[in-house]
Every structure is written in structure tokens, then in C-alpha cells.
Image (cartoon, rainbow, N blue to C red):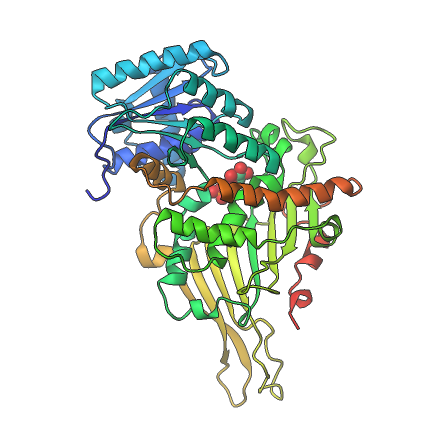
Length: 487
Ligand code: BG6
């Protein structure tokens, strides 16, 4: 099959029995195996503190796959992956664990003929990451030998502000080359996110409109209806919506929507253009932060498991900003994300300018937002374009109508999970859909100014929105289209 992996490898998951492994990584590996992408020889090694044998872990993996398949209504077919699964129990803060791991990996290399190729996936709490990298390096486990490769995948959060992200980058670059580093942002693995570039640069009719002359505003929404689900409170309370979603997923969406055409489709060309968008984000002053951001926290958040009962962590944020470059100067960029909102929805709305003159006003008002392009990232994946049409009849009464592309109707096939594509890319050595160090740092630079601005403001009056609502009332004022029309 096309894209089938040919080189053998060991895929080591630190945090192999954790939530991310159970919900995303193991089901993704299973799909890759079931779809025939895996090479003849490979091993998946889970590493975690929980004491377990290989057999116990295989059971854990089987359950993870079955839970996921049930959710997707597919038949379980775990066997092709399970025979390649192994486990190592150990505390990753202790150097001894890495002696055991090295022995185990060397033995698997020898027994299965894995050629020394290794990918280490750090699905662990962020504070454990530097220690794991240090321990791997200390045992020479990050050094690539002639003809083999070693890659390390870093889960988000990559730092918690500009300073910590820079420090982490510095630390890992002492022991890894940039080509070995895969900083994951799973949004980039979504089909609909990758399609932004095909839509913009594979069609001649849209791209000429993507600029300040024609666009009135760009709006990115990542709304989630769920809260902490009884398992994420502890992490989330240290992060908040700005760090959890805006710093990575939303700024990546913005880069793809706003970037210039890359010189080629090579990873570095695409990353170079994304970086230029991040450079053009304004550094907000504390006054601008006060005026252009709204924070929220839903009622009941403080009672969630793992959350501080007096928490001031934001579960919602709205930001009004801009991209200060030639193409986009003056176009408002509206961002909103939050937990426990009215629905689960990620989309990008490009609102186009009004016609210069409403010729039909003697019949009825001209609709204010006639032309809007909506990219539905999830769910109900697709793209729609709205325009006005004359209602059948004797006068010129206009009505909004839609042209709609739906993935489901057009392709009629399951969209691969983001992690499937990303794990495949790690294993074949393609970093295009991963973030480079400068991207991460520039994203943090924008976010850190907002965090600093907030730290100078009086503490927010939380909770301030109802679960199931559209977020704090103040936010709808900030994002209100009638206030964002450019003159
Ligand atoms: C993760 C965040 O990166 O993305 C979560 O940490 C969030 O808080 C999740 O729920 C959303 O991902 P998706 O793919 O469900 O939109």
C-alpha cells in the first residue's frame, strides 16, 4: 500500500498507561496497524509507573482499543497491534529506569531486528519532560547511529509562558537536533485543518479575496460542551483556556488562514510562512489586554475534581486582535474558546465586506453579512459560502443562501483521527505538521503579553457564565459584528 512504513522501529510511550495513550495514541496505532501501514517488524513499548506485565499491558491496550471502537461503532480488530506490544514499569524520574529501558530496547532490537530506530513519545505531565530527556541523553539513548534514527515527540503544553518555552527549547536542543524534535499540535493532524492550505492555494477563485481589501473580519471559534469530565481538572486548573487552546490550536489555525503562499510544500517553507504571521501579531499593552480580552469561568467549575475551590483559572476566553502586516492590516481577528459552552464546534468564519452600495434598498434592507465563508473544522466537517439571492417574486427582496461542501456527503468515508496521521508522520520522518521552535516561542510571546496584562488587572469576578451558554455576556459585546465593521 502507498505510504506503508518500510523501516522497522521501536515506539516508546512514556505515560503508556495514561489518559492520552488510552484515548488517542493506542487507538491511533491500532488503526495504523489495521489499515496496513505498519512495517513487518516493530515494537510498541509502554512505559509508566503502574506495575504491569507485558500481558497486563496488552489487556490494557485491548480495552483501550475496544472502548474507542465502540465510540466509533467499528468492529474491534486489535490483534495485529497486540502482538507487537510490550511494557516496562518504572519511575521516569529515576535514572535506574533508563538502564532497564535501554536493556529492554536493546534486547527487542536484537530479537526483532528493529535496526536501532526509535521514537520516544512523551505523553507525561509537563514537569516530567525535561527529566526524561536528560535521562535518555545521559545513557546515550538520543544519539543516532549511522543508518538509524531517533525521534522524540513532545506533547503540549510546551512550556507555560515564553520564558519556560525558551528554556525547554534550549535544554532539548543541547541533546537533540531540530530534525529529531516533533512538537505535537494535534489540530494540525486534522483533515479539515490540512485542507485549509488546499482550499487557499489549490483554487484560483478564493485566494485573491483573502486580504484586507475584501475581508471584513476573521473569527475563530473552538467551543466545547464538555467540562473536565472528572479527569482533566488537575491539569486544566494549572493551564486555563488561553494556554490550553489559544496558544497552540487557535494560533495554528490563524497561521494557516492568514499566511502567504509558501515557496513550496516542504515543511520548512510552510513553517517559515507561519512564523511570519506570528511575528505580525501585536504585543498587547496591559490597557489593550483590558479592552480586548474577556475571561470567563463556568458555574460549577470550582467543584470539579482536581480543581482548586477558589480557582481563578479561565475556562473561557475571547480576544479581539489583528495581524499587523500588509495583507491583513486593520482586519479584526476575533477568537473565542471555552469549556461547557452551548455546543461542540470548531470553525473559522471569514466575513467579507459589504457591497459598496445597496441597490435594492427600496425593496428591503440589504442583509449585513451577505458573504461569509465558513470552514467547519469539526463536527459536520465541511465548508460553506453564503451569498444573497433574489427571492422568487415580483420585487427584489434578497435572502441569504448557502453553497455547501460536506466531507460526509462528498467522500462518504471515515476521516482519519488526527493522531493517526501525526504518528505516521513521526515514523516516516515528516515534520511538516509539527511546530518548529520559533513558532512555539512566538506564539508564547503573544500569549505571555496577555497573561501579564491579566496579572495587573483586579481578580476576575468568577464564575460568570452558565454551563450550556455562549459564555460571558461581556464577550458577545467584544465579538459583536456590528462593532467590528471597518470604516
Ligand atoms: C486538547 C486540550 O489539546 O484539545 C483539551 O488540552 C481539548 O482541553 C482538546 O478538549 C480538544 O481537542 P479536539 O480534537 O477534541 O477538538
